[in-house]
Image (cartoon, rainbow, N blue to C red):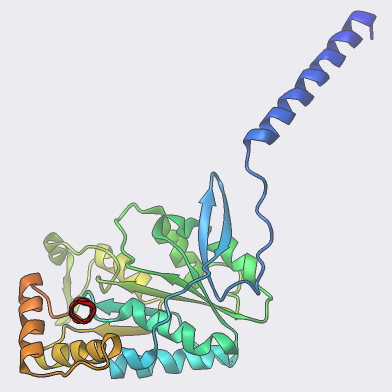
Length: 296
């Protein structure tokens, strides 16, 4: 190598080292390993192309006893969760149905009840489902039992997270980790929109009705959840019972009389819904107004 070539190579290496130093100042540091003692609930967050688990230091402290009007659903999902926590076989769970009926609150309440027995929760947004395999690898082999939680889940036909979820649920050549389950909530039973024209694909075979390929594809995801739990809209009696429960919670001294029930009904009518969420919102408003009167 000539002296000129050697000098050029040295200059190139020097410039490359300077460029790397500048990049290190700009690029985020690699995420640290999670401190598993810091929290019982975690959230998967992306920074650039790299994701990491961030602790949720103040998880929602709701109790199973606070969830009224959904006793059959509570029994099913709690039984499944209890099996999972005890290291027994359990199923991935899909909770579907009317909005505001306690689907997501039930998952949070189960975490609060079973956290001391090793249950942990990892919340994943729909757009991060492509990282599910990385999340499972992160917790595989640990002694804790992890529920990967996807709230208000729904897909369009070309959504990349759709196939990623299918693979993690059932479709990979690798065996599923026995310390991870997926609990998802959705307002759609099959997690995808259903259109009128898809009914035209149904076929009649020997007097039996067979769905078309589009419908079969949609069902193929939801059926990978071993446990389906449906939630239904509340009637007025259930709604008033839930409202009364939360009024007592926020204002223990309050008397649940006809006037309170009338206000609760008017609150629901103004919002066009008798959901548990609406009952909870009414109780907070009512208890707040009582508190303001006392301060005067």
